[in-house]
Figure: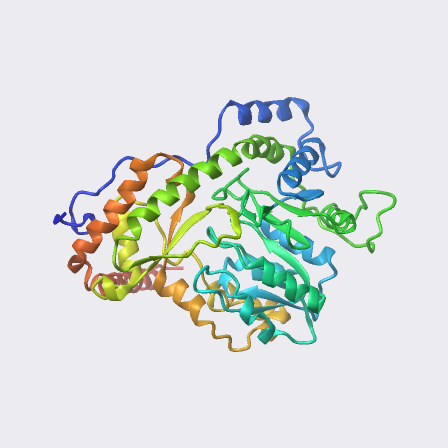
Amino acid sequence: MNYRLALRGGDPVRTKPFTAWPIYDEREALGLHRVLESRNWGGYPCPNDLAREFARKFAQQHNARYGVAVANGTVSLELALKAAGIGFGDEVIVPAYTWEGTAAAVLFTGAVPVFVDVDPDTYCLDAALIETAFTDRTKAIIPVHLGFRFTDMDAIMEIAARRGLFVLEDCAHAHGGQWRDKRAGATGHAGSFSFQTSKLMTAGEGGIVITSNIDLADQVIRLANCGRPPRTETRGEPVLGHNYRMTEFQAAILLPQLERLEEQTRLREWNTKHLEKGLKNIDGISLLPRDGRITKQASYQYVFKFHSDEFGRIHRNAFVAALNAEGIPSDGRFYEAVYRSSLFEFAEETYPAWSRAKRGFRCPVAERAGYEESVWLPHQLFLGDENDVDDIVTAIEKIKENVDELIGYEDERIRVQGMARAQRALLESKIPY
């Protein structure tokens, strides 16, 4: 397969688009139309009719007794923590490699995120390192089920039981997944899910907290509903809540999305297993091992490791750029080590807890994953057939065989970006006020 890379002017492996996401049909259209005609559009009364129906069905499908549908997935994390009594001065264990919103939700409660490195086999929170980060202020753990792997929930729950900690599963990537035949979010004390556009189920935005603790569920509703208690017998402390309610339009879309989840989960799993058959034969690509305790695989993104030494010492970013040019949507710096994120540069001024969180964290696995090693393939690539998957393997093989064309690419990119920034600065300096 000795032909020029698309990044260098050759023909791409694939020009046909993959399965479009989000997927919808007449069920979403009919649901939206019914809400429109009903004139009952909003989240109040809380929960409103469709939001209550969706939350009940989602919680039931995920082995929990109660579900509270809310505005988005960051809010769902924040509300679950607050409902559990997490607040100012408390510390919450968070994986160093995740979306910034996981740590931001901790800050929004007034608590302090404490970053712990991730397991190199899963890129999820490394349970073996958790207790090294404990202080007398540690009150909770947020295991994040990342990409398509689960955190070791057996170890997490054993530590939590021994230490008396609240466990909030961040399941933004894990809709429909199972750990030991228990659905994501049902092993911890609560689970948080996102329905943002890219997620395995989506209404554009939205989130949910699931739990089997009625008092926790009641307090989540109260916090999301301007402080109003959901029942006269609600036992949680009175609070001044926010308006974080889910609208009926969102719920109308999510109900049919939930109906499709099982079938889509099976299809992604079939295709990702087919992908692994091809990837395991390519030197310089390694797979995240499968854990037998994951009894149903949810794949928000398929993640593999890129090893520069086997690819002419090119940077991971050059490999990802070449893969995209071949018509395979992919990402490298999908996440980074959270404590190094530019999104938190301002946080110390706004959130005093952040100054306490910045302890000179050094999490080498998270940094290696974020800046050198991980490659992420979006889940919609696996909603087609095996021919789609074969194109992914072919593109990677093509890059491997023509890797010499990429040597120096990253330096070229950085130089071009620097020139562009300099040109913008020069133009801006000449713009009269």
